[in-house]
Image (tube, rainbow, N blue to C red; front, side, top):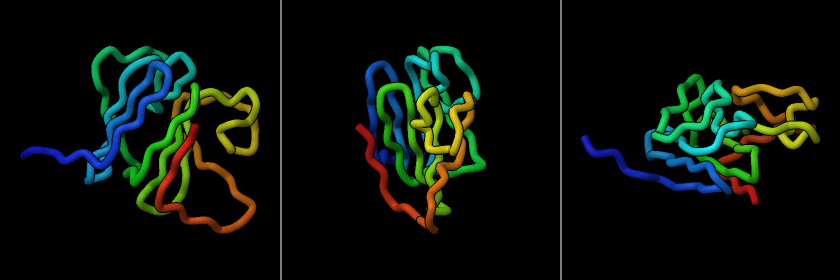
Length: 113
C-alpha cells in the first residue's frame, strides 16, 4: 500500500525521506558515507537504509547524518575527521555508529544544522 512520509531532510547534496514505519530512503552525494548505506558511492536514485535500526528521526549537517532509532539511541554516519559523529573517535566508517553520551539519553527527535 501507500507509505506515509513522516519527515524529509535535505543537506547540501544529500536527501533523506523518513516514513512513519521507520523506513528511510536516501539519495545524493555520498563521498563521506553520509547516506549511511555502507558505501561511498553517490546514489542517483533512492536506496533503502537497512535495519537493524528502525529510524524515528533523521537530521543531517554537511557531510554527517544523524538518526534516532526506535530504541531511543542516536546513530551517525559520514564525515568524522573532527569527531563530529560523536562516536568517541575520529575513525571513518560508511555505516551508522552509535553516538556516545556521558549520561543515559533516550532521544525522540533530532535536528542538525
